[in-house]
Length: 152
Image (tube, rainbow, N blue to C red; front, top):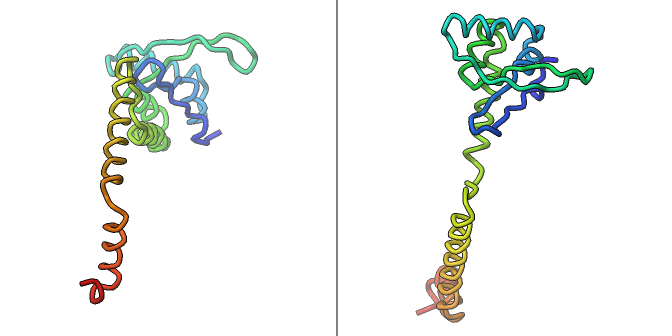
């Protein structure tokens, strides 16, 4: 199951995170081994203890997973299987690229109203500039570009 589609990076808490179960699936390791690696790295002081979540597995049984940030996930994967580190790096890079290409969503109602007012103002200014141009001016400009010798 080494397909990158299993990596679903969660951003609900603000910081992008990936579950220890997803890492286990990515690197074809048992989830309990991944959790042990996380716990060992915490004990050694390499990473801080990541938050946990309870999820239902494919047998509808509740299991606890660690929710790792980018740094923690990179360290865990590098410890367990260095060959897959690049794939995890790519998953986080893709997430960052998508976030950079999306317009920012206003955080408050007031900010949303201000963004709307700014957009309307910009549109009105553009329409005013278009209305200020007389049709003759537009036609003559195009004609001068197309046939400069005949428009004098």
